[in-house]
Length: 145
Image (cartoon, rainbow, N blue to C red; front, side, top):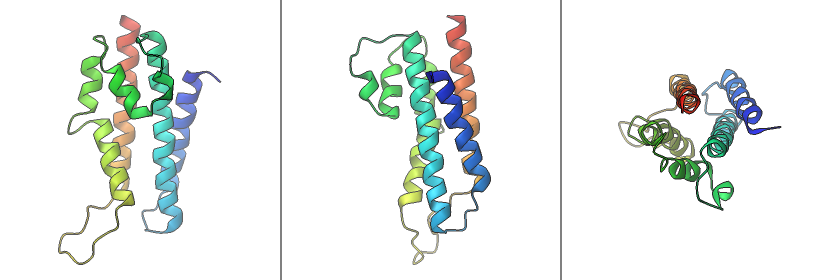
């Protein structure tokens, strides 16, 4: 499979997992949340590889980087710098992914009045929507260049 097919395959897997999430705190649900983010990160990883094949960078170790480091490296390209840097901002895709992943692994503290903010379907769908918009904007920008 080429990277474009893998991008969509992992995105489809992520969307299927979202349909199975119940947010009931069970071990199965927690595993599904981890699988969701793993699939999403794989899709982002293959998207980064695809973008890098269009805008080659002067680096030999690009394929060995994790998905986040690949996007940080791609943000050095003047063509897509602004698009990628927006996703590292406070309301960006990468920031949302990392924040929610931290919440999944952090234990809830019931001893305080305001407990940790729960992960819900709205946040997961927000991340999926942000990813789809990001992917579409990248594609349009790269097609025009």
